[in-house]
Length: 372
Image (spheres, rainbow, N blue to C red):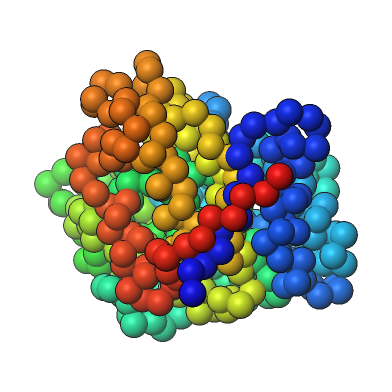
């Protein structure tokens, strides 16, 4: 039996058909209210965007989801995790500052905001899986306390996985900083003594005291290193040697991580929105935004993360490209063009869907149910 994916298009002929109102209608039509019991703690996972990014999902949509949760008798919280490395979203307090700058506050959302992996991104729980590559995943510990998880994803391009949607919102957005390190790299980080200038910036920022100075040079203790990325971000001479995963391997590790999140929370307790609007070629974590690649398609809702991502991908593929965007430069204006393959030169958007289906996370066989 195909998975149902409910769809509200981007057209509005009266106020009841606006995208914000359709968010509420999709919540009801997709049966999300049936997941929520009175007093349940319901986490809404989105992305707060980056400083100077202008295509991230607007807070008004998250507020609508929060209000629907309250109508069901649930207790909503809006959640995120820290970013990998040492940057503008690398700690809970820095990430909350970015969130507020982009309009995400407890007042605008009508719900508390929680950074699931703690102040430095180290608060995690290891979940054992049988993945494509990984056999355990470092999931943000805060997820252990929630009764229901609702993923609200801005569907857009991504330079590793081809696109970011429901699966990426779990497989990157719900794991700890260590988990992100496991997606993007392999273990065995070390420091090139010939490049190290002895500044000790990495020593100061290492959250596990894994870096010590030996004869004026930094040395990483492999047993203590948690792949947080702080040292890489702050090293002036770029002396930290990391074996980064290639984009395909990173995509497979991302899907493994999504499997760990689903195992921890429970497939029966997760629901998904994909907002196929402002479809930019790059992730919301970039500090700028390019022209969108297709016109707004609308909003999707489903209990199946594979089906909802496949439906969103099919919509973007079927739509004509936007003139003046990167897809015009790549010759992808015609309906049916494989836009993410043209943009990035590889097909990891297909890899992630196939890998997720093979792990039993969902099905590519879906039925699109249009509302209103």
